[in-house]
Image (cartoon, rainbow, N blue to C red):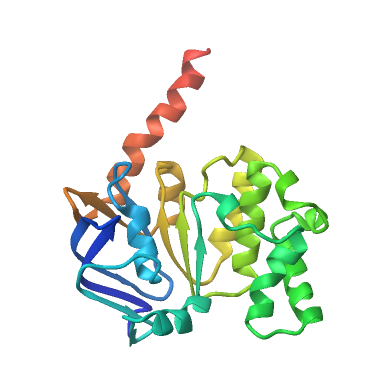
Length: 237
């Protein structure tokens, strides 16, 4: 079975400067791959390059069995990839929640009634159906995050790319987010500094070191980073 996503020898650019070289990465059906590394290492730039939002300095991007080099080629496959931006305000642009979540299905060619029905189903699946008529800029950070995720789920993509999905999300909203992603049947490519989140969701981990993307042992990282979350509870006893 061919990979959903395949990068070969990719050079990733940011503002005209090379940040990653020789990137080789595949994502197959059912996989959940975490990308970790220091701030500024190039994780977000890599995600943006995969969908043609950033220029590359060489290498190959193959999505769903097709080589992608031109904007037209990327535009054809983008509806199959849901991209959760790091900043929710960059993703919400319609006046109300329901309009925003229905925007993607409308662009897929669904009629207005079907698009709204799919949007409501996505919102209710995340436990936020009551927000449908709310104005986007009046939402909390956690609510915005879930609304953005609902917009992606409503499009039923084959792959979701998540850029720091737990940023600014409180415990209650974070629990709903994790439950939805654990239930999501497609493949995931996620960037996160939240080691507990990575350990819970990812099946494989890659780390950026010195401008290179290399395999990492997800179990070792998870055990090391879980301890600081436990020790404060002991300190208060």
